[in-house]
Length: 373
Image (cartoon, rainbow, N blue to C red; front, side):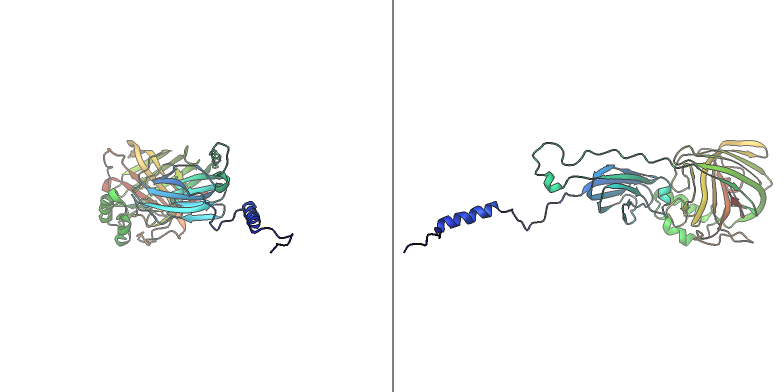
């Protein structure tokens, strides 16, 4: 039987079908290959964050945050519509946070204490740059890297200097050694503080954060300048007559820069800090407060006109009110929503120096109705 003239032999037809299939675009039900997350290590401590890389290509990024400090921290990534954080990370522990990041700049910081750890210096930046599609990059014939070389991060503009002038007024009280009135509240916080716990437990039993208070007289005013992380300054004088009749004068003319996590001590002048108490920032033996200004100064201290030391350690805060009127007992464990008008002056000897000639070897004075401008 003859085939019609317009009919191809079966073998030829099969060849055409095979050729057509070969010429058609390839199809696959497999998803396109994705670049694995860029890995960034973040080391947290008091009061810094160090990243293993400061520039990465856009796409998935996996942060491994390790707490090398002595108190709990966390890691937050913010920018370009992203704001995500790890759970609280205990000392010695790690946590991972994986995000997909678009090109742009991101803040990396510790959010503990309503950003108080951030204000103390736990902040840095990550730059995310556009990169070629990973699948197409893997098939390029030309040599060279598959993603752009890291670009340097643009320098962050220096913050404008801020200053504050504080004048003490209202009743003046001297706080003497005694038991801390909220031991059940401070105890769980103190347990997280490692080597500091023994000293804190002793101060819970008898220390400078007590209701053992006496009215005295005195005056205090100072000006503090905050220029960011360096070059802060303070200038001020406090004079008061203590319970035993001794006349004390302290001259503040320089801030100190050494961080001591729980005494509390930190470098420089800081404004608007939320700390103490339950915040995980410094000692839990001061109720939780907000401060208009907080600083540590290395100061000159005089007793009855004679120089005691040029190295007194002086802590100053204008903070939310912690003591009730009348008997001036501590009235709240969380005082952070109270009016900011209590001026606190705490003076302690430097390491290796003798205790002061005063109860407990320290001086602790409050001006209860103070102001700033």
